[in-house]
Structures are given as C-alpha cells and as structure tokens.
Amino acid sequence: MTARCRDDCLRSGEPLAGTAGAPAAWFGISWPKPRWHPEDKARSDGLPPALARLEAAQRDAGRKIALRLFQREARPSTDRVEVFAFRPRERALETAHLALEDLAPRLERWLAGEGVFEPCSERLLLVCTDGRHDRCCAEHGRPLLESLRAVTRGHDAWTVLESSHIGGHRFAANCLALPEGHLYGRLAPADAAPLFAAVSQGEVWKPGYRGRLGLSEPEQAAEAWLCGRFPDAASIETRPAEGEDETRRVPAVVHWRGDKREVVVSLATRPFGALESCGAAEPVARTRWIATGLEPH
Image (cartoon, rainbow, N blue to C red; front, side, top):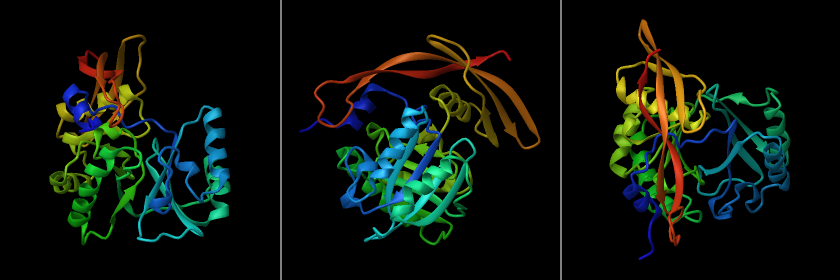
C-alpha cells in the first residue's frame, strides 16, 4: 500500500501549530474543480494567463500572495467568477463578482490599495478536497466537507466551500475559517460539530489549530501555545518575533474582558522528518518552532 503523508506526519509527532503560512494577501476564486491545475492554481485550465503573470510579479517583488480556487455550485460559471479577497493582518474579507477578463486587473488594483471590492458579510469554512494535489486531501477532506455542511445547515450566515490546496496536505483534513483567518488541520468528520461550535462563537478550536494566516511561524506557535495556557482569554495579540539563530521571543498581550496581561513566549527549534507527499520514497527533514515557556516581561 502506498504510504500516506498524513499518517507518517502524525507518527513523527510534528505539531500543527505554526503551519498556517504568512501570505500578505489571500484570494479565493470560483472555478470548476475538474479544471483545477494540480500544482499551480493560477495556471488552471481556462483562467486568464494574466493571473499567473500577476502572481509571478508579486512574487518577484517579494510579496507572497495565496491564490486558491473553490467550487460553490455543481457547475460554476466560467464567464463570470466570484472572488473573495482577504488581508490576513487586518482580518478584512471582501468580495465581488467579475467578468473573467476583469479578474487579474481588479486583483492588481486591490493589491495596490484601491477599494474595488465590497465588504463580505458571509462567513466561510473552506475545506481542501484537492486529491489531484495529494490523495490525503481527498480521502480526509471530502468526509469532513459533508459533515460540516450537515452541522451548518440552517445557519444562513455560514457557507462551507470545497477548496483547492490550502497548504500542508500532510495535515489533512484542512479547513480555513474566514474572516478570522484561522487554519485547522488533522480534522475528522466527528470534529465538525465541536469545530463549528467554537468558530461560530468567534473562538479558536484548540485541538486542530494550525495558526492564523499572516503571522510568522514563531508568532503562530506562540499564539497557539498561549491559547492552551490561557483557555479563558477573550483574545491574544502577538507582536513580531525577536531574536536570532535557534531561539525566538514573541511578545504578546493576553486580553480578558476588562483586563489584560503582557507576556513573552520563548521558542526554540526542533527537527522533524516525515513524507512530503503520499508515495514519496524518503522523509523530508524540516525544522519547526516550538514554544518552550514564558519569560519574565
């Protein structure tokens, strides 16, 4: 039997915390799933070449953007697309319906700071089911998708969408909650109800928490560790990580209703090794940031 990256990653003990990624901008674009490219979503069949050029130009300028595709309907339009645009640091989610030829120019204007989209009141749960990218995403993602659709039925403010690769297929099943920007992994169908119970209250569901989009890995690891240490906190605000080499310090403010506490989380690196994808011949070594405790502030 072909080795599964999710199982191997779980055996390695690699933690979820700190793996959400840090794009400066995130875009979700409606497109038929059969036409998704297995690796480079901007080059999916039928999408305008200008979209791939925009992504490359942003990358060359040192600005990381995340382009994801989703399917809401059985046969989504290819003449007009639905777009979600998200700024992770501001937790601002916006939306628009565009003619296909307007897609890349409008995204470029949005990235330049122009107000070309409308605020989005819809709350989203995007589940990666992209089996062409990795088998674990389909095997674990589709059952989660159906379970989340069942538990959110009747909650009109919430929409569950089938998404292309979210990132980290070794953590399948993966689910991104917007506009919070919280990413969850290693989810099973039985997790759908407790996950939704938490996110619908604006809370983090700690057992599957990978981190908040837009923060650096040390910040994400520190935030997740603080969520476990202070489970009754109303919110946690991290600051940029300090330090060099194999240690970091992340200042943070833990908020309760009517009170707050300034803390500093210490972190150190630790190596892990697991298969990068299903069927890979050898594990890949990677270094991860692990929270080790609180320092005096």
